Length: 225
Image (tube, rainbow, N blue to C red):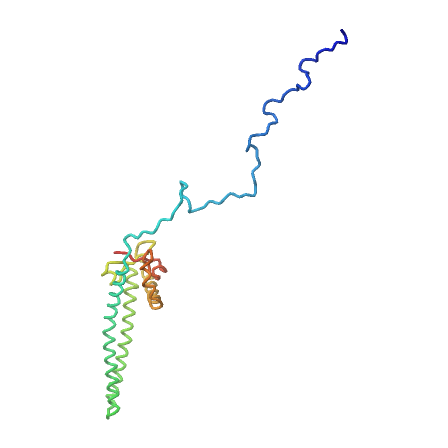
């Protein structure tokens, strides 16, 4: 029959268009092809905080080559050093005081009696010589202390007192004597700080490295010899 409906051609059924190949038009997997996020610079590395294995880095504590000297040992060395200074300076000082006293006494007595010009010259000479000895005693005290606790201790690490007690001064960085230059600076700081504030000498009692203030300034520690 001519007007009988013919079945549509095979493959032309309505709603049955060709399917796109698998994956076509699908969204790419997460993270694929995404644009990098600008404006967020990477964090700088934290130097000195972590070691190569990621563990926290802790700066090692300074350990002296020998134990720190006790406060009593340091005080004993100071007393011995200043005892030597006292003995050396006391000899010319005593002689000077005696000569000055004799000259003054003789001059006072001569005012009530008739004196000659020769005796006046003698009294003046005794007074001048006595004063010279007093000045000399001060020079001896300062000079010897500078040599003993400055130059000698700087080059050898020990003053005479520290040598007797068995302790020495060393540089923290090298564990060796500091040299004459730093030895002089350390002595000068000791003189200034000791006279300005006695707390400098007491500081090793509670300091971790048993340092005085003048030790801290010149980076030195006192250890057992």
